[in-house]
View 1 (cartoon, rainbow, N blue to C red):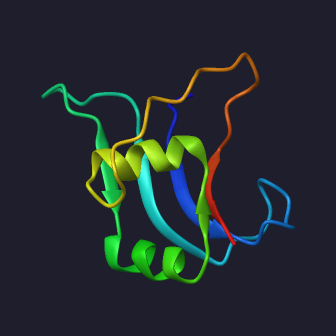
View 2: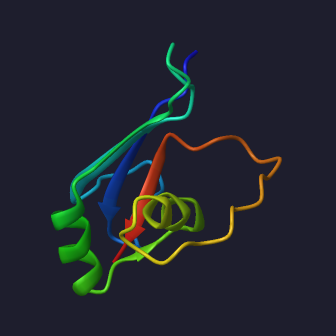
Length: 91
């Protein structure tokens, strides 16, 4: 299976793979033929949700730092836990 992640805004009380409020981006961690990993972010909506109090996970914060939406973040540590299908901004 090819990994592909949706970056979503979700209520902190909802389950990880449960219902989300809005999809604000995607991340494809496998580089394409040109060697570039694809990240698509709706920066205006991300800024809106963060102004409303949304907190990004460490991996999403790292991506947002790379995109210039947040200050640069240290690269998150890899864990042995199974990979998630959603990355989230939690309210």
